[in-house]
Amino acid sequence: MNTDVATATIWVMKFGGTSVATPDLMRNAVARIQERRNEGHRIVVVVSAMGDTTDRLLELARQLSAKPSRRELDVLLSAGEQQSMALLSIALEEAGIAAISFTGRQGGIRTDDRYSQARIVSIDPSRIHSELERNRVVVVAGFQGENEQQDVTTLGRGGSDTSAVALAAALDAKGCEILTDVDGVYTADPRVVPRARRLERLSSDEMLEMATFGARVLHGRSVELARRYNVPLVVASSTRSGPGTRIEPPKEEPEMEQVVVRAITDDPAVRKVSLLHVPDTPGVAAKVFQVLGEAQVPVRLIVQAQGSKKHNDITLILPSDAPLDEALLQKMVDIVGGESWLLDENVALLSVVGEGIAREPGIAAKIFSVLAEEKVNIDVISTSNLVISCVVPESCLVRAAAALHAALVETE
Image 1 (cartoon, one colour):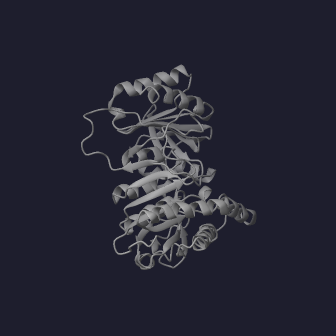
Image 2 (spheres, helix red, strand yellow):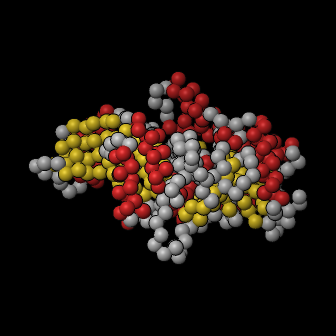
């Protein structure tokens, strides 16, 4: 189809690693791209590395060094997405679709200097616009950009999702489609809860909480960007047509005060750190976060429990892949004047997500009753307007998630 480029809208499509892992899947991606072109869109595609390419490159680096340079790791890992972008462009050209591939730098993505965890500072989309005006599909390597020193940087976990949404915002795209190996966002992980069902719509606030607390279909940073810049998001299957799940801004006029549980999320990739017998003095939390910030360790939850004789225990829930060792743990204890630390790797985060659930006492009561019936011990509890999270033994996670889904979602 010869699209009228003067009037066509821009549509961003992101294909995950499992969606471009083989030549046949690349050809499938070409067919999906052509569908969107036939609807009159100018297309920008963002790609992840093929299959397990990133893991294989990391393993090669670790065979050479126990602690490789983050700068060199970024140079290495960015090659995975560049491979995907070139191959998909070749596949598009073979199908008769004019295409050109860009690295993150060529696509105008500028970042800060944090290697392996860079944040996007700005995007200059002028080169992409120029190629779109020539009726080309522009294929951009996700997960990467360039800093002020003209070094390659990578965006960390979920970086390709973030690249796609950021480009959609910079290009004023009509929408951003995240294409993956599932056909949308589900009420729970179908691998954990087989009776989970696809959601037709979620608010961006609900999706952000789900992503933050374990839903692996979409990364939280991309949802934050979509909400900030009002980018319409769709999560859909890369291999078959379907409506997927639409991620939209919260309704300005919700249905009175209706409280609805939207999903159960689970995250076994966490660990619990407890700082014991910490003096109850002002500034303790600031000192802990200063140490964690310097080490670039994100915190999922923090709970402070009142102890005895003006001392507290501080419990932190951290991602399993966060850079954490005994020296860092001891540094935290020393800086706050605590006695010791404990590390528990055998925990998981289980969360119930929905608009206004924390203001409805019956929801919390139901959650705790269900877990008690399942004999699941709750270690830590955290609540907000949109989510109630519990830290539970990892061995109980699947059973607990299924029980909560049956009690709170399947009964609706």
